[in-house]
Amino acid sequence: MKIIQFIKDWTLPIAMSLGVILYFVYVNLPFLAGTKPFVNHAVAIIQPVLIFLMLFLTFCKVDLSELRPCKWHVWLLLVQAGSFSLLGGILLLFRDMAGGVWMEGAMLCLICPTATAAAVVTRKLGGDAGHLTSYTILSNLLAAFLVPLLVPLVHPNPDMTFWGAFILILGKVFPLLLLPFVAAVLLRYLWPAMHHRLGEFHNLTFYLWAVALMLAIAVTVRSIMHSDYSFGYQAGLAIVSLICCGLQFWIGKRIGRVYHDSISAGQALGQKNTVVAIWMGYTFLTPVTAVAAGFYSVWHNVVNSYQLYQQRKREMVHF
Image 1 (cartoon, rainbow, N blue to C red):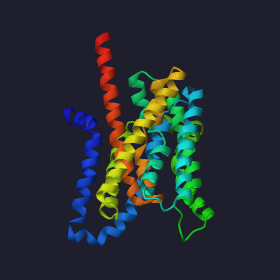
Image 2 (image 1 turned 120 degrees about the vertical axis):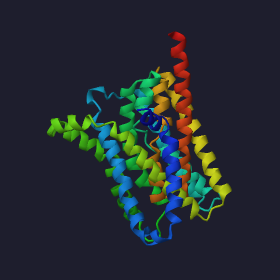
Image 3 (image 1 turned 90 degrees about the horizontal axis):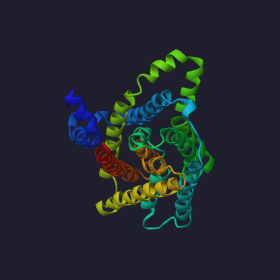
Image 4 (image 1 turned 180 degrees about the vertical axis):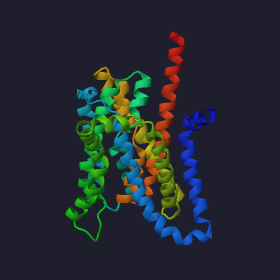
């Protein structure tokens, strides 16, 4: 049991370390060289499947009666949509700007949906998990429509028209971010027994997330190793993600404070489903932008660790 608890407590560094280690072990074993095309194809399929299953099992646990819209949802959606669109507009006007990839990295960090685990952290911090879960669904909806709309303009494919790229990206993003919720709702009403049974396995999402994160980090390392961008430029992506992380937690808390829900709003805007961001980065944008999403995973977990530490201190004082 101690080993299992240790793995749970250190899942983030373990998954990230394994992703890095397994990548270098794999590429340095000559007899596996012939399997690279197959592995690349397999990862391209496995990664979105894991994301779908994570979201589906999470939504199977959601009680629809607890989903409640509130005013700060509107403001946070405007912040995400506005900041993503603003940076996209700047890139459209200045296509050859020196920091273009940094801007793409920032766009990923800003539009990325709220993490499915954010409700757990919110509950521990004393926030409203119902409001947070509602925003998680809304942020997935926003990303599912806005990413296909702007990415073909910001990062055009020379072999495709805008509408061709739009349909292609929509066909990949929409099912991944929205169908899990739709499927969970339909299953609840069409096959309640199976829905209840799957809800009992919601803890499996923790392990699916760990595997998905490991694969995402391995893909990020591959992007770094095969990138033409310098180490300094890639380090800039880490700084960009740090700034985005800090700003989103701060803005979320400021808006939430107006509605007496600063904890929930802060987590909703600041804690991201970075596995989705990494996948979007290397699938639709310049692959090296996945570095920004990878580092965001570190930054928001540092913030959460500090917040939980402060919460434990307050509880000990009251006790």
